[in-house]
Image (cartoon, rainbow, N blue to C red; front, side, top):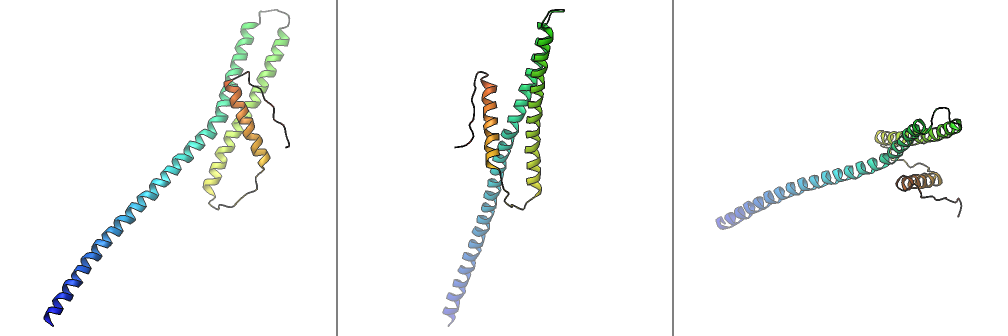
Length: 166
C-alpha cells in the first residue's frame, strides 16, 4: 500500500507541475493575443488617419490653388493695365468675375473640409453604428467633381463632361 501512495503522490505532483506550466503558457498566450489586438487597433488608426488626411488634403489643395490663381489675377491686373488705357474696365470686370468664381470655389472646398471634420466628430461621438440612407448619386457626383478638379489642377488643358443617366 505504501508503494501505491508514493506512485499516486508522484503522479499528483507531476500533474500539478504540468498544470502550472499549462497555466503559464495560457497566460503568455493571452498576453500575446492582447498585444496582437492592440497592434491591429493601431494599424486601423493609422489607416484611418491616412484616409482622413487624404480626404482633407483634396479640398484644402483646391482652396490653396484657387487662392494662388486669385493672387496671380490681381498681380496680372496691376501689371497689365497701363494708366488711362482703353479696355481697362473690361479687363477689370473679367478679373473680378474670375476672382468671384475662385472665391466661390474656395468657399465650396472649405465647406467640404469642414463637413469632413464635422462628420468625423459626429462619428466619434455617436457609437450607435446605425445605418443611414445615403444619396449615392450625390456621393458619386461629388467624387467625380473632386477627381475632375484634381486632374485640372495637374493639367489645366484637361477637359471632360459627365453625363447623367445610364
